[in-house]
Image (cartoon, rainbow, N blue to C red; front, side, top):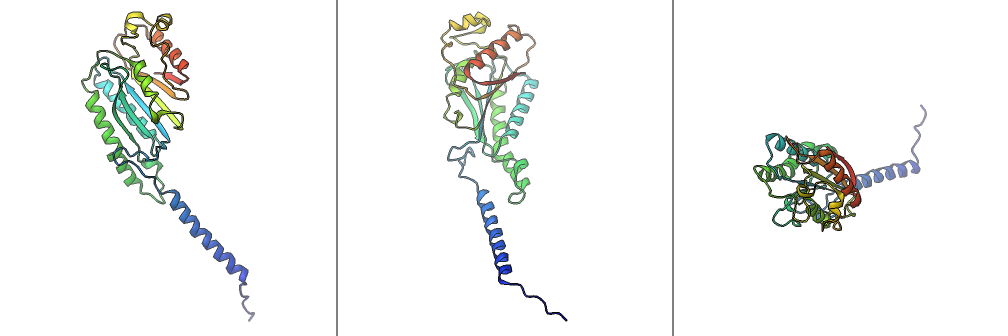
Length: 257
């Protein structure tokens, strides 16, 4: 019977090297999945390295009916789901009493959804439960408190966006920035009111707001028009005005829907 060939030292060295590589690989993968330190209230990263920030500015110059509330909630749901882990969402409303101080209704970061969970190191069901409890529920709760039966006497949209564009957590260092404007798009404040001057660009050029533009370079902007039975001005003219205004701010103006 032929003698079984013994394995030489190179075989064992290779096997040991393979095992060590596997062990180090597992440790490296585990280290990469270690979460950064986060704020206990907002779930946002303590190092302020937000991967994205979406601001939803909701204007209620007229009361929202049940249909309006339903689609605004659906919009918030979609934007919240689209965020990456640690992505920030801020819900804000204009402030008629102090136009340059828009009110922050809620601001927080996604702890990650089940869709983005790593099944090797994470439990998708637990991830979804955490997302619902820490992010979705408080966001929707605050939205419902503010949006129901709330009416503003004016709509200082430009002033609000000027301040929002100046937020420290909404600067060019954030890789992905979005601004969602939910409104009938009727700018109405002391410094410029479409109800008084219409959408004539020359009238806007004579206003104090002409030289006061928000820094929205690189920001993806989408305007969602609140349905009205009757609009004070032709909607096409209003949309054209805002398209020009956003282009002058450097924003990536996507659409008005």
